[in-house]
Length: 77
Image 1 (cartoon, rainbow, N blue to C red):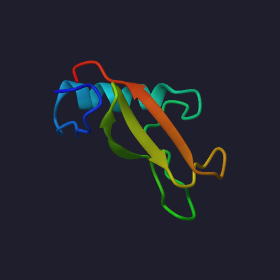
Image 2 (cartoon, one colour):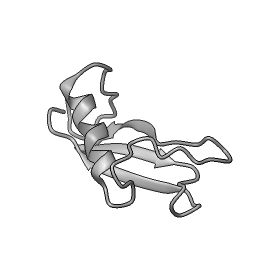
Image 3 (cartoon, rainbow, N blue to C red):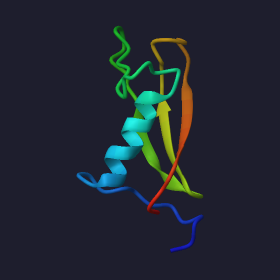
Image 4 (cartoon, rainbow, N blue to C red):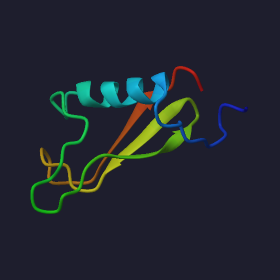
């Protein structure tokens, strides 16, 4: 697989657990991988993996009130 190919990491894999744990540890998230926004219920969404990065989006992060994007380094892609 080419590093620039789009893929989805399967559930119940070490890579999936690792990427969500790393997302939680990002300073924006304070240990919370979900970060549910209290009014809208929005939370982090895994958008896919491409270019050696797992891509995440939050439509209304509770800490910023804004749309946020984060990329987490992929290990076993």
